Length: 330
Image (cartoon, rainbow, N blue to C red; front, side, top):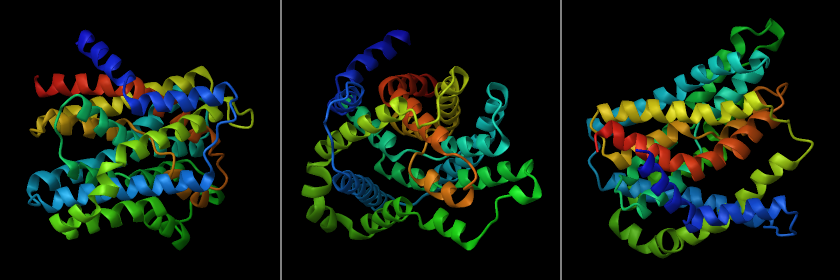
């Protein structure tokens, strides 16, 4: 198993997607003047969400909505809700953070990272392992349940004046967050468009997808490096840093074990494991800024983006593939 992980790791390190992330990360650490304009970065993020959503919706539209898919969606939502409770417990042993701070970090680790998911699909393609594109529906389903868990955890030990109020503004941010709307909306459009629709947009959503992803990875590499080097950001002590590595391994193992028991292929098992291992740094922070304005979100964002994200895409993917193969019995 160790040899398999090492071989996959070497192959992953030579992937253009990973190399461009390392390029961006290194450029920022070396204080290069390389920059990607903010509007360009935002456009690329929008493109990636539209493309992955549309392709996933198209794949589901070509597939009968059976009990297998429904069970997978339900499992994804359950994991998104319960993983924050595991994360909260681990943080209780590793840190002296306040309950609201632990709840905020836990929410990030119950939700998902779209870019990590996309990178995982590219990794599976290079490994010549098939998977179902409709798995993006599971990604969409796992975006928000973690926030409900966060609110429960934050209110458990909070004083009356510090409880999270369930206002209309909070619910609007949870369900109408831009990334959620775009991903789900593109998924629905892809499911409705059918074969003719896919042929029409294929040059944009398929042919150039990987190149655009590489450009985005340069940008996200620079952002991740800046989180580490910025003195204004929350400083990571060793125990919190360790959490950023341990939690994705726990989530991936539990996710892979569960999906292998229901008869998933190794590709789908790995994608589910990746979803359980990833940490949000877009949708969850946006919602928590409104729901929990008293909590400093620099720590969870730095932890998820500068620790867990690089670990997952560089080292985690080969590990999760080996774990998935082990549980599937390959």
